[in-house]
Length: 389
Image 1 (tube, rainbow, N blue to C red):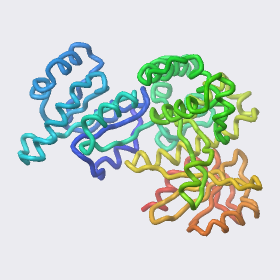
Image 2 (cartoon, helix red, strand yellow; image 1 turned 90 degrees about the vertical axis):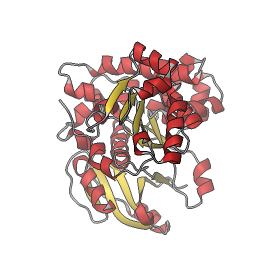
Image 3 (tube, one colour; image 1 turned 60 degrees about the vertical axis):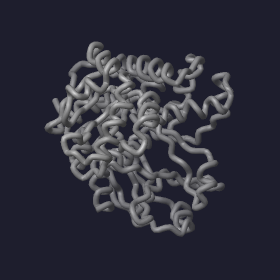
Image 4 (tube, rainbow, N blue to C red; image 1 turned 180 degrees about the horizontal axis):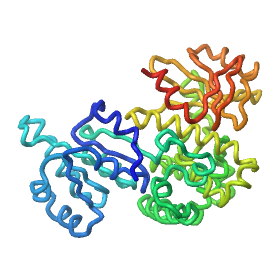
C-alpha cells in the first residue's frame, strides 16, 4: 500500500542545485518516495558490493551509472562525494549537457550525511526534509492509532505489526546506536536517559540544567545532545517569540518530537486508554499539531517558522506561525475546543504584528468562537494552504 506523499505534489516546483539531499529519519519513506519520480535509477549503498565499488573507484562507478540517480544511504560510501563535486564543477565549466549532474542523495544519519555534504558539496547541494506520514497524508486516521503509531509508514501498511516492538527497535538501532556512534558519544546510558526525559517534557519549557542534573552530565553536553537529536529530525525546537532576535536566541525553547509515536513510546505508554486520561495527553496533542504544521511547510520544500508565546504573567499562546510577507497565525491547541481568552487577545494585540487569523486547533470538529476559528487536524492542511497561496 502506498500513501501519496505531499512532497511529490510540489517536487516539480522546487528550485534546486545539481545535488538534491533528502534528509529524514530512518524508515520514514525517503527511498520509496524518490522511486516514484520517473526516469531515475536507484543505487542502494547498503549493498556491500555496490558500496565497495563506489568506495574503491568512484569515478568508474559514476561513469557506469550515468543519468539521473538516486543514491540511497550515500554516507555509507563517502568517497562518492568528492567525485560528485568534481562532476558538478566540470559541468559548470563546460556546460556540456552530457555531463549534467542530476542526483538525489538520501541519508538517515544526518550527522554523517551533512559532514560529507559540507566538506565536498557546499554550494552544490540543495536540502529537502521528509519525515513520517502526516495526518493529512494518512487521511482518515483515528486519533488513537496516530498517537500510538505516529506516522511511521510500516506501522500503517502492515496489519498486525505492533508499534511497541517496532518503535523499540527503531529507538535502539537508529537513535541509540547509529546516531550515538556517528557523534562519538561515549556516555550512551546518559544519552538514552536524556532522550527519555526530553520525551517526558514535550511541549514544556526545556530546562537543560534539570535534565543534566538527572542524567549526571553538564548542561553543555545536554544542549549538544538536543542539537544532535534535532539535526537528525528526532526532535524539533520551538523558540519563544520576541521582536528582538537576540532575545529569541537566548531564551528557553520548547521541544517536541518530530513524530508523536516516538514521544509516546519513550514516555512508556503501550495502551491508548490510560494515556488519554493522563496529564501528558494534552502536550502530545500539541505535539501532533506542531508536527502537522511543520510538515505542511517542509513537504513543500520550505522551512517552517513557528514560535510560542509566553509572558511573565504566564499567559501563553501555543504557536505563532509565520507566513510569507510577515503575516502570522496565532494558534492554540485544545483537546476540548474553547475560545481564546481576553488575556490572550490582549497579549496578541500588544505584539504589534500582522496576525491575520486566530485558530483553535483540535483533533475533532468543534464550533467557531467569537475570538478564534475552530480548525480540526483534518482541516489544518487546507486552512494553511488558503493562507499561503
